[in-house]
Each structure stands twice: as structure tokens, then as C-alpha cells.
Length: 516
Length: 99
Image (cartoon, rainbow over the protein chains, first blue to last red):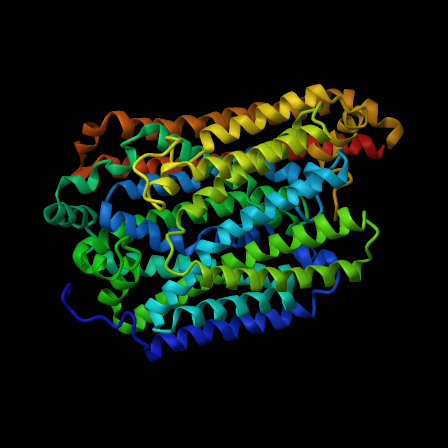
């Protein structure tokens, strides 16, 4: 099997069929959703009509990017055990989100997490900072997705890079523009189903090849690549680095605007809570599958073949699918990867548009006097604007090493968004100045430190040494944002905010007065 | 309702609801921390341990799956608690507000 020619990178009828089928079905969903998307509540929050189970799948669909599917499988295939540490890191933030954030977030906010940060503070400065932090997070997260989309579709379909990026951009913009959050949610649900179903099929086929003898699969990898495939390797060379990345991943989930926004699509705190448990279950199950896919690819396809296509091993899952089920299966999996990217970029762009239209335009510029119609119109314009930016940046960054931007997006989410959100919800003496200072510290410190870190200075700019020793700034920028928020708040007491904190409690814990 | 807000804030059931929510969240949250950073530190400082085998499988694999599975289990435990205990307290306090 390893030396068999592959259809990867060539236009195959099967692949085009599955791509087209997915686009047609999701456009149908968008048409259906467009009739139910008129008001701001419908556009941003799907009319709060999504159930806990559905939102769980949509959260999983929003979160599991092509990077985690193809990337982790590739990491396991080429490096072995290290990949598992990564997937655990991607999952452990979810219980934290459930235990501390999801329910009060749903109870206190309306459409965005900034609603909660600004709840009892001065709207203008807090929302301005929060929308900047949201946009920066969203754009840093979008760039690798768009670059990945271009590269992936070129590899899978043989379309030129630029064409691929433009297609992804246009399809994604159509979902949001016409179907708002309802269409985006269903695209994410369909994608989650396809991704989990597809990965399950690949695993079943792989295990079938080993007569469902799991140890036999692992032993065949060991016989070929040695015991090292099962031992911690390069990633733990510097434990502080791993811990810093771990903090960014773990807390970052609790500050990602597109994830937080999903909690406004459910009717109440109970549905919000249930949805996180479903999401955690699906994502965890999926990571166990990717782990088996990675080892199966190493055994059945071979590292040499995988790395011929892509050094990072990103093509191991599609190659494994082809080895197991021919061009038909490859085509199906390629379409799944395409769906994965679309669902993630749609969620990101909608969160960015909400920050621009709801936080910045409606509440900062118009100070809450904008009409419903106006707000939706601005949100649609923002979608178009951000969509074009995403396409442009995707083309500009062609061929660049942008994978580190995902880590940066998580670091910013963890340091700029999370501390302000947490303190605003739970600390009585938190003030407007404290919120502004904390958000700006988190934003600029994480972005600044990553520029002088080995990730940028050594890997990209090719310096011999970096000023800041860690690859991810999380371990410094997150505590710094908390500390600055704490000190500045103590220096600038705000009586009104303190009084409102007591009022807020009934809403935080009981959901009394929450937006419906 | 606004008149009674202060009373609700001082209500023993409301206080119980708040403190039990924090107790459960902090307990389960620290479990997540211990599991995850325990796993990271074990990988960082006891690499030879991973060469052991259990039932013909390298121990790292069941350990990793265990961490993933317990992460999921923790969310299930919290939801079970919140659906059965927390929501009852919430209903009880809400009933008092209505009266």
C-alpha cells in the first residue's frame, strides 16, 4: 500500500461530488434559515431557539478546526505520543468553561461576552477595548484557517490556492449574510456530525485491517518506528514552555469570542450547561479517534509517504482514508475537511461582526439608540467587510508559517478577554479603569511577548536567540492581566459598579432577568 | 421584587446555593488542574515511566485516554449535580421571589 500512487492533489469526480453536495445542502439550510432571520436576536443568537444538545454539537463544530483534525492526526503519525499531550491540552479548558463561565455568561449577557464585561461598568471604554480584543483574536485565528483552507483545497482538489481561499470566503459570507446565527449553527452541527462520523469510519476501517486487535496496531508501529513513538518527545524538552502553552489553551477556550457567543443561542442557563457537557464529550471522543487515526496512518501508509506530501504530516488522515477505502473515501474525507474549515471561519466571522456591529457601532457610537433594523444592517455590512479581510489576508499570507497565530489567538483570548470577564462577573470592586487596563495589558503583552519569543524570532525571523525564552506567553500575560486589573481597580473605586454587583447576583446565579 | 431584593440576598437558601455552587466548581476545577498538570509533569520529568507496558500496550496510551475520559466525566458530574441539586435550589429561591 505505501507505494501505491495516490489521487491526492488531483481533481477526482468523487471529491467534487462530495464538495458540491455539502455546499448544496448547507445553502439549502441557509435559505431555510434566511426566512427565520430578521431581528437582531435572530441574527446574532438564532432567536435563542437552539437546544442544549444541538448547541453542544455546534460548539464542537465551532471548535474542532481542520488544524486539530489533520494536525493532531499528523502529529501522532509523524511524532507519535506527543500528539496526545496536545489533544488533552485542547480539551481541558472545557470543564473550566462549564464550571465558572457558561451559566453566568448566559444569564448576564445578550449577544457577546462584552455585554457581560460591560454589564455594570461604563459602556464606551469597556466595549471599545473588548471589541478590539475580539477583532484581534478573531483575525489571528482566521488567518491560519484561511491559509489552511487554500493549502488544503489545493492539495485535495487541485484548485489554485487563491481560488480556494475565495471560494471558502464567499460560501462563508453567504451563510452569515443570509442565514445569520441559525444557518451558522446548523452548518456547525452538520460539520460536527460529518467530522465525528467520518473519523469513526476511518477508525473502524483501520481496526478492521488489524482484526480489531488494538495492541497489534500499536505493535506494528513500534516494529517500524521503535519505542520512541510511544514516549514523550520533543514537546516536553522544556516543561515551562509546555505549561505556558497549556495555560493558554486551557483558559483560552474560556475567552474565545466565537465560542462564548454560542451560549446566547440557547434559552437558559440549564441549556448552556448541558451544551458544554455534550461538546466536551464529542470533542474528547473525537480526539481519541484522531489518536488512533494517527497511529494507523503511521502503520498503514508510512511516515515516509505522509511526509512526502507535507512535512507536518497534515495529509496523514486523507492518505489513510484513501489506503483504506479508495478514492471514494478520500473524496468524502476531503469534503469533511472543507466543511470543517467553513464551519469554523463562519463562527469566527460572525463573532467579529457582532463585536463591530453590536459592541462598537450600536453601543459605543450610537450609545444604544440604534434601531433593530439598523443594527442588523450594520452587522451584515461588518460580515461582508470581515469576509473580504479574511480572503485578503488568506491570500497575503500564502505560503507563510502562520500556525503560531492559533497559539497567539488562544494567548490573547486567555489574557485579554478572560481576566476582565472573570473579574467583572465575580469581583465586586472591579472598575471601568481596571477592565480597560486589564484588557489592554493582556492584549499588548501577549502580542508583544510572542514577537520577541522563539516562535517569531527564531522560527520566522531566523535570529539565533530570542529575547523572551518561552514559545507561548500565557504563563506571563494571563497573571499580568489579572494583577493589573486588580491594582488599577483598587486605585479607582467605582461606587455605582459596586452597588450594581449586589443587584447582579440574582441574575448571575438564578437567571432572574436574563435576556430571553 | 426590587423591594425584596435585599431580603433574597440575605436568604439562607440563596446563600446556600451560592456557596455550594462555588464549592462544587472549585473542587471539580482543581481536579481538572491536578489531572492535566499531573500528566504534563509526568511526561516532563519521568519519561522512562512511559516505556512500561500494561496488557501489551504502552502505559502512556491508557493514561492519556484516562485523562481525556475523566475530563469528560467531570463535566457530566457537574451537570448531573447542577440539574438535580442546584436547579432545585434555584427553583426554591425563585418561588420565594414570586411570593
